[in-house]
Image (tube, rainbow, N blue to C red; front, side):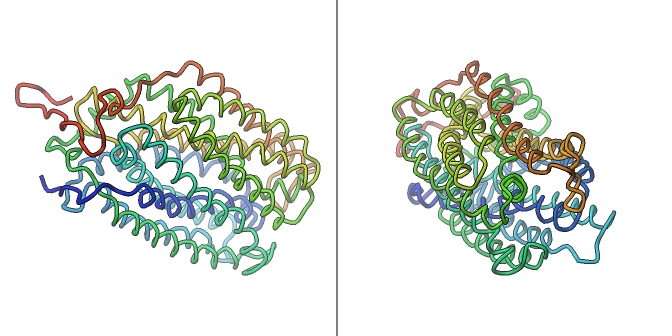
Amino acid sequence: MTAVAPAARTPPWRYAVGMFGTSIPINMIKGSVILYYVDILGLDVRAYGIVMTVYAVIDAIDNPVLGYLSDRTRTRFGRRRPWLVVAAPLLAASMIAFFSAPASLDGVGLVLWFAVFAILCEAFDSVLNANYGALLPELFPRERERAVANGLRQGFQLVALVVSLAVTPVLTTGVFGTEETTSGFTTTAILYGALASAVIVLMALGARENPRYATEHRPRLLAGVADILRNPLFWKVGLVGACYGVAMALVLSGVQLYVRYSLGLAVTNALYLQGAVILVAAGGLVVWTRVVRRRGAVRTWRVAYAVLAASFVVLFFADGLVPAILAGALVGVGWSGMLATNDLVVARVLDDDAASRGEHREGLFLSAFGFFGRLNGVLTGLALTSLGIFFGYNSGDDPGQDPGLAFRFYLCVYPFVLTTIGAIASRFVDVGAPTADRTESSPETPMPPPSVPTAQEPAP
């Protein structure tokens, strides 16, 4: 075995700060892609939907492979850290190219540029998140400590969202560019890419992986995928979590155009709406994390889902910036509850798999869960395409007769339907306690390593 024993336990803040770096690039992409490509460059929403669908097919293939390779990696630096250090600058470079489309591009050329760099950005983001997420149950095996680490990392994510969502419209359309040009996006992407890469490398160099998790037995791809697909918890938690993920993807991608068309304000005003949502969510994380430690992740998850669903009803009826900010605050309350709980529910599924199968394949499992996350792109593409069918919004050049109502549906009605389904379905999901809590082990006295199949015991 080539992995080295950790010199010391990883401080929660050192792990958590990595979420700041992983969140900035992808959330700038999600938050500005429609404004940049559809509204300013004139990419047709139908082309956008097709590209997102094609990407989902590609992603369904490459995600399990990426997770599988991570699980099988054996180096003196650990399994996850090398992937994090390599993928960070590659994601930054892809994001910069994504927001640097040549002004001369249009038609098929613009669609191809969008498709190539959207796929690259999502692929490198998948590498980062599969490896970063796999470290959470490994570094923090008990749920109380895991809840604290997760609360801290979600707090860093909210700070990143302030930067990548709330501040971005000001930088791209005010400081470095205008509402009708694209130069501001390129400059902002360069700044964010450099910052994100530095933070991710800082986190990766300080993470102390547990060598006991890297057993000599290396998971197999096809057998592992087949086993995961037969796991009912994978489908239950994945599909229910997807309702939340798609809903928030719609919110992140549509808020700037909701401000422009539904509220009739300059895009820069998205700073105040997004800022209010994020600040409330940051404060709510403290409260929700305490509730998790007292009531458990699953029960708290169900309550948070219901609160988030109700908040979209209030947001639909907002008719100005101040009412929208107040409604957005309620969205922030529900959202922070989901941030505090959703990953903990997923982590329990990973614990259960490791305990029952005798091997740690968090990378493969999280990559499989990533398939549900990639439904975001398909369903946001379909939702955007539906605006052309129902409301006549096809692009910034052809916005239809009522783009304001179109983006109220996109930002409020569709997320409400999804989160209501998720809130109801979550009542039928039950997962056991984390393995370390069941055995009353602690991070300082780790559980014995999982058994390794022998020649008489065929590997699963």
